[in-house]
Image (cartoon, rainbow, N blue to C red; front, side, top):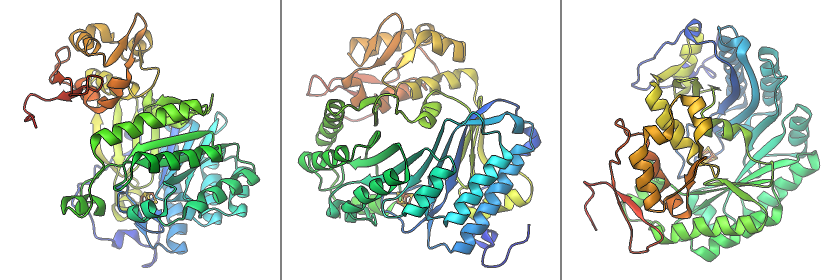
Length: 439
Ligand code: SF4
C-alpha cells in the first residue's frame, strides 16, 4: 500500500516495543460475536484521558486511516477465523469516532459489511462527543444500521468540564441528544464522571438529575481515575488539585445507584445503569468473557483464551498491517485457571454476579470447589450474597469491588491473600493487604 508523506503514519517516532508479528494464519478458528473498532482521533486531549488518541488530524489522514482499518479487517476476514467473525454487536469507540468525516465513516461501515457476515448484528454503537454530531451525520448513521449512540457528557457544570479539559458546554448535551432523537435513534447512552476535583455531592447530584431529565436509555457513571502521567495525575502529584476524598466518592456512587433506580434505571453493572432491556450488549459480551476482535491501534482482542492488543501507535500499527501481520502485542494464552479467575473478576461486576452452573459450563471449574475459603470469608464479612445458585457483591462489597476481584486472580486459589478489615464505618469494610501500613 503506497502512502504519501502526509498520510504515512510510519514516519511517526516508533515506540520501544517489539512487534509480535502474529500471522493471520495462526489465529484459532473460533466463533467471534463481537467487533470493536478504535478511532484514535480527538479534537483535543482531555486531561484525565489515557486512551490512545491524537488531536489535530487532517481529513486526508483520517481517510487513509479508514483504508488501513479495512486492510486490517481483510487480514482477519482472510484468516481461518474470518468465516466465524459474525458480529452480534459492533462498537466503534475511541477517541472520538464522530470526528471521522461522514464519507469516511460510511466507507468504514460499508467496508465492514463487505468483509464480515453481519446478518446476526443486533446492536451497533458509536461513541460521540456532544457537539460533534449534525442532523445529517446522525441520519446517515441511522440509515446505515447504527442502532445506538453513546455521548460523553461527563458533567453538567462548565467549571468541572473545564477542569477535565473537555471541549463542550453543558447545553451541548441536550442539543446532541435531540439531534440523535430527531434522526431516529431509539437507544442512547450518556456517560458521567464523578469525584471530579472540587465536586461535592450536590454538584454531582445536579449532573445526574440533568442526565435523567434527558431520558437516555442507558447511563454510565464512572469515578474519575488518575491514570499515570496524564496531566491530571501530574497536577495531583504537584498538589495543584485535591482529589475528592474516598468517603465522598462512595457517597456519590451510592447516590447514583439509588437515584437512578428510582428513575427506572437498574444497575446491571457497578457503573452502568439501564432501562429494562437496554443494557449495552457489547459490554455484556466483555463481562461474560466472550470472544471479540479489535481493529485499530490499541484495540484489544480475545479469542477463547487467546488475548492480545494492537500496537498503541499509528505508525507501528500501520507497519504491521502493511507487512500482512496482525499488529499484536502482549499476546497471552490464558491457562484454564487464569481464565476462570478473570471471568470471576468480570462477572462479579454484574448485578447478577456469578451463577455456579453457568460458570462451571464456561470454565469447567465450580467456584465452590475452586475458592471455598475465599467465598466463606467474603460471605462472613457481608461482602457477597451467597446462595445455592451463585454469589454477587453486596453494597458493602461494591465499595471494595476491585480488591475483591483481585482475590480471584490469586495464582493459588482457595486462600485469601489479603486481610479483610472493617473500616471505622461498619458497613463499608475495606480489603487490606498484609503489607499495607495502617494509617
Ligand atoms: S474525547 Fe474521550 S478519547 Fe478523546 S481525549 Fe477526551 S476522554 Fe480521551
